[in-house]
Length: 342
Ligand code: NAD
Ligand code: WQD
Image (tube, rainbow, N blue to C red; front, side):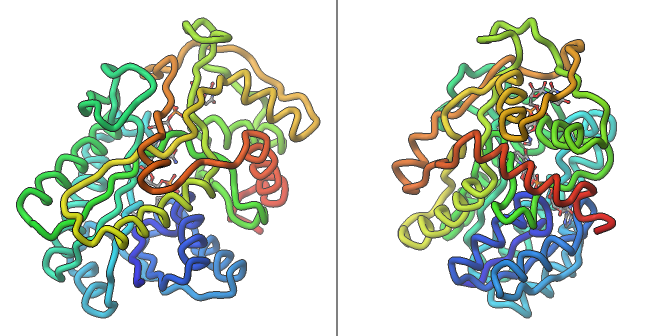
């Protein structure tokens, strides 16, 4: 299989590229390195002993995309490339719509021109919005996300549905990720956020390595088991393997045309306090923290019903919370500055 991975140098992309190589795929990575480093790809190559074709380019540039499809015989596209900072998306919404929505349209157009029909999209639990009750299940209607970022995911899912309705050969899979954390067990690749991390685990890891003073816990008065928000955290390598499972599913179901969506999560809600305790146990050190006001837009609790992916894709998020913490720490302690300055 020849797979084009947009955004393949990023956090989830690099782990997925590793899984794809381990499953004997040929991989072309297309990334503008806006939020990543080529070092991730070099490390994936060194871990697997296999090589990746890397192309520096932007999904909003159709000419560049067209060249990729002309010069590589691509079977399947896995589309990670996007901007992903929820808070920032409210400050600069047009950049988010341009990058995430217009960029996806350019990619789908280039695919159509080159008759490439297999498309796996990085969607998010955020598409369930605020209306749906937990656990989220794929049969629910798409909701209204609280951020422009979330809206871009809903829009691309709709664009996929319309593409499928107009092209009887289009085969789309939308993978709705819950909260990916952790790192490859080697500690060689992991999440390397630029600037101050927005997400919980990178922030905790940077506190533990001494780069940040203390964690702010955003609210402890939610109607949850201990007052802090609950999320469905899954190991990034389980998530990576979910993409390989989705690709196999497309390959095994040659009669399929249309769009299917799958939740990728564990099915369990874990609170912020539980994350703090689990990390402290993994590292054997206390995390300095304070409880601060709620963060705008945070939902109290959500987790996946992951039955559909378990049954149809034969996929499960198997790695434990403890392993997520141990692997995060192995990566962060060996690479305190991520891919920078090593
Ligand atoms: P990331 O920022 O680490 O990776 C995204 C990659 O896309 C980066 O390498 C970036 O340089 C690249 N990119 C961005 N815009 C581009 C463009 N216009 N052209 C080419 N490359 C471009 O993010 P990630 O955490 O690996 O997320 C990957 C995907 O998964 C994104 O679509 C994100 O929205 C989605 N997602 C992430 C999470 C999460 O918690 N990390 C959860 C749900 C969904
Ligand atoms: C987890 C919990 C915070 C940081 C976001 C997007 C979602 C998906 C993943 C892409 C929350 C709390 C966090 C901190 C804290 N991305 N927290 N102190 O908000 O569930 O999801 O990223 O699709 O769409 O919305 O993840 O890691 O930011 O937060 O207390 O410094 O940790 O309030 O309860 P979130 P997160």
